[in-house]
Every structure is written in C-alpha cells, then in structure tokens.
Length: 545
Ligand code: FAD
View 1 (tube, rainbow, N blue to C red):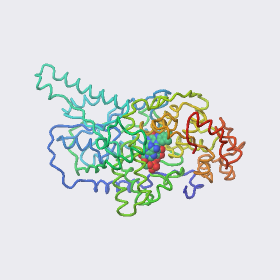
View 2 (spheres, protein in one colour; view 1 turned 120 degrees about the vertical axis):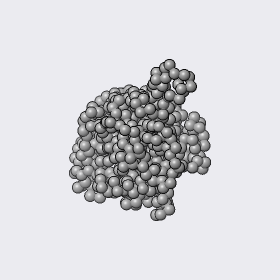
View 3 (cartoon, rainbow, N blue to C red; view 1 turned 90 degrees about the vertical axis):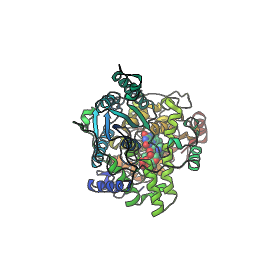
View 4 (cartoon, rainbow, N blue to C red; view 1 turned 180 degrees about the vertical axis):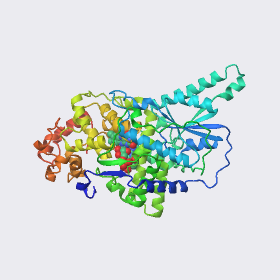
C-alpha cells in the first residue's frame, strides 16, 4: 500500500483527480474531440424533445441525449431536483443523501451545464417532482418525446410510472373534445433507454429473469457470447435549444436542507464528467496505474491503489463503455496483462448487480434477502452508533468508518471488513449498515450497495459469497504496518507498529468481542479454534477471510 509521505499527508487533502481545473477542462475537451462524430446521418427529427437527466449526468456516450437530438429540431435538457432524494432512508430514517454526495451532485450538474453550453444547449434545472415538472414543460414547449435513462429499482421505477401516467393524463386533458385520431397524436411519449451498464441488457445471452445465480457463470457467459457496444459519438453541436426564459440555478446545498460539507482529510472527489474522464486519463495514462491494478486494488490508503471511478459511474458522469474502450486502447498502445483485464472483471460485477436487481426485485432490500434467510438480527442502537461513528474500539473498523464520514468513500476491502464486523461480530441488522452507506457513499447505487450487503450478510443469492472477515487477518494482510489506521486515528501513530491494530488499554475499549477473538488477540498468528470456526460455519458464513 503506497502512500508516500504518509505523515505529512495526514492533514492534507488529496483531490481526485489531482489536476487543476484548467488541466481537467483541457483533458475533457480532448476526450470530447475524440468522441465527436465527423459525419453523422442528417438530423431528420421534428419539434422539441426533452432529455430528462437522471443518473446519466454526461454528454459522452449518452444514448438518451443522442436520441433526443436525432428525433427533434430542438432539444430541451432538464434535471429535476427531486425532494424525495433528500428525504430519509426506508427503514431507519437516515438522511437519504448526505452532504458530501449532495455536493458531488451539485458539481456534476454544474459541469454538465458547462459541457452542454459548449455544444449549443443548456441545462434547465427545476426543483420538484419529475411527474409534475415534465408534463408542464411538455405542454409549454409542445414536446413530442421525453427521453431518459432506464432504471431498475423500485423507487426509480415508481417515478418512471408516475411520469408516464402524468404525461398520459396531460394528453387526455388537452385533447378533450378532439377527434380520436388527433387524440392519439397529441400525447408526449416517455422513452426509457438502457445506458447504465457495460453490457447492454438487450445483448445478454439470457433474459434478466433467468440470470445465473453465480457471478462466474454470468461473467463467462457474457464474455463468450455478448459484445460490448461502442460508445455513442456526439455531434459537435447539439443545438439549438428551444427559447427558455429562465434556465434555473444550480442548487445551493443549503437549499437541499443540508449543510455545506468540506473534506478536511483524505480524498476529495471532484464531481462532473470533466473530472471523470480526467481521472481515467490520470489513472491509465499519466500514472500508468492500470498496469498494476490487480496487485494494488485491495489497498486502503490514498488515491492510487484502485481506480476510484465509482462516484462518477454512480452519477452517470462516466460511461462504463468509455472505460472499456480506454482499457482496450491501453492494451493496444501500452500493455495488456491481468491487471488491465481485471478492471473489466470488476465492471462486470457492477453489471451483474444491476441485472440481479431486475431478477430479484425488492428482495434485495428485505432482511432475509433474495434467499429469504431467517436471522434474528439485533437493532441495538448503541452498538450501531459505535460502528457508524468509528468508536468500536477496533482501529481497523474505526479508521474505515471515519474515512467514510470524512470523505464519502471507503475502499472495497474496508467495506467488506466493516460489513462483516457489523453483521457477524455485532449481529446487527445488515439493513442498518446498508442504509448508512446509502446516506454517506459518494458512489451509492442501490444495486451495488444492497447487492454487496446481501452477500456480506449471507442473505444474497449466492451462499458461497457468505464470508467472515477476521480483523487480525485482514490487518495483517492489508495494513501490516498500521499506516492506514494511524492515518485516520492519529492517536495511534505514536504506538509501535505491531500494537496499532490491537492497542489494548491505549485505545477505546472494544464494544464487542470478536467471534473468533480470544485466540486472535492473544496470538496474532493463530486462527480461531477449529471448534469455534465450525460452530460459526454451521450458523452462517462459510468462509473465513
Ligand atoms: P475499483 O477496484 O477500481 O473497481 C472498478 C469499478 O468496478 C468500480 O468503480 C465499480 O464500479 C466496479 N466494482 C468493483 N468492485 C465492485 C463490487 N464489489 N460490486 C459492484 N461493482 C464493483 N460500489 C458502488 O459503486 N456503489 C455502492 O453503493 C457500493 N456499495 C458497496 C457496499 C459494500 C458492503 C461492499 C462490500 C461493496 C460496495 N460497492 C459499491 C462495491 C465496491 O466496494 C466499490 O465499487 C469500489 O470500492 C469502488 O472503488 P473503485 O472505483 O476504486 O473500485
């Protein structure tokens, strides 16, 4: 785990990507140039089309935007600041969007607006529910079609249904007294377009409902039988936009009912498509880190052990197909090895969780998960608060939870460890953890979040993904010098390295004992007794990591 100058870095903030705004703009312009179509079929559409931006806050490889452009004479880009996104989580009432993700979203919107303006459009930002805003805009501008990216989870599907219904109601009310023939031509259509995954849903070798229950089977099948579509090239000008008097403002965070949050330590991600393509450029081309991704990806400290693409993927400011094309270009121009492939391997996990959300529906949000496993979970508030505030007495857990609170990010290794600790060592209802992640994560996405949590809690569709993460073992393997814990818990830095993970009386008293704890704390090298482990295996969890 490399993080040169860790001690001085403790108070500094690592901006991701690490470019100035001028450099970021230059890299984004160059990337857009490469993806600008030199010759496109003539635009034959008529009238006005809306592109309703949701979790696809980008210009590059955005099929909804492209289809709106092709099918119209004028495109009206719209973003609705939906108050439901700033309500509370489903079961436990945490803020649905924390301050850091809200700030990231604001930056995404500002960048999208700038990039649309450069191409002859603008972004109309309105506060309210899409099912109220879109019909009223459709009426005002005589819109024939609203194009938007298709989602897969219940809250987003519900909004799609409401928008569709209100557009139909609008058509009926405005056509009252007209002939049957003109009634049918009056309505504004909602066209939902797939754009969220690397493999297109229509190119899968099976229907979503018969998706394999094992990731490896899914991966092997798509790798063998499906092709990844090319990115959609964009015309150099997307204009004109219809004449709009007031384009609205990028929301201030306080208007969303949240306080301005600033990252004081660790990584500060810059929102927006320009930053997203710049991060790809930085990770692949400037720092050459794609070459070694597979060896470093399990790190926890600093910006460079993994790609950090996830916040932009979740907001849709980065297209997974663009990453695929950049990996292929890297393989052609620099090197092709296990690491270059492994980024795609991980993106296929992301696709898999997306498609699973279709197959499994709301069961991914239920306590028993897709397999309807019955577990007597506790909802002990004191224990949960200790976990979420990073006060458990286990430095590895506390450091990870503090990173999440401070930056909105946590490594994949960290997420697996804190999830296992919450559900297995604390026996706390995994949905509390998942909802806390929903609040805090910059990269929150319902499919990847709840999919991974169901796996971590042993209620996912594949029981083989059910694992216990042993803190001593994880500490030994992934933070052997205690640099990560010392970074997030400065009081620990003064301790000898071998004590940093188990500081005893020099740190907070552990709030629970580890399931395999005693032997571990006394002797760092031995695993829990076989009898203990088997007892645990019998109950849940079939692998100790
Ligand atoms: P890299 O290692 O560089 O991987 C490249 C990309 O592959 C990631 O950006 C991501 O899009 C995808 N990816 C990698 N691992 C996974 C995975 N296990 N599942 C799905 N996609 C993956 N990821 C989210 O994007 N949103 C979430 O809400 C989310 N919640 C999680 C909750 C838990 C309990 C766990 C264990 C994992 C969760 N993940 C989630 C997956 C993973 O931890 C993050 O995608 C990853 O840490 C992001 O960092 P990165 O971009 O540097 O990843």
